Length: 153
Image (cartoon, rainbow, N blue to C red; front, side, top):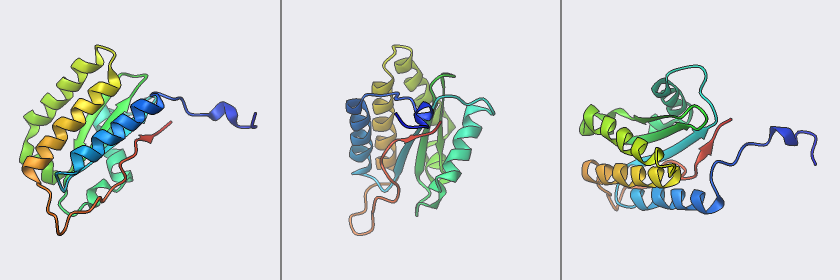
């Protein structure tokens, strides 16, 4: 046992769940120039969830995608908070109502205690919208951001 083993991060998902979420991101991004990232932490004690999502979005440099079409799904597990933060390109094309409805859809999955499935469904929904608004361009598209889930504290 290491000296700092008590600082070990909690596991929110099984290895299978994590792999399915990452695969959902990869599948969604195959047909769009858009980017999707997931950030999960235990608690958000300092600010509104959308403000925290914005802070993380910029910390992860998600605003640097070529078409400004990155989306961050933020979840604070213990505080039961979630937010979607979309860069200006995709936010403007989809509109506020779309993002509000996407959050409501996820919340309906979470209330059934099916968090990983709710995340996968949200990724698929966002991926479809990204595909419609920012379709894949074979000669210029590249994966601009990592697909792995980012776990905070």
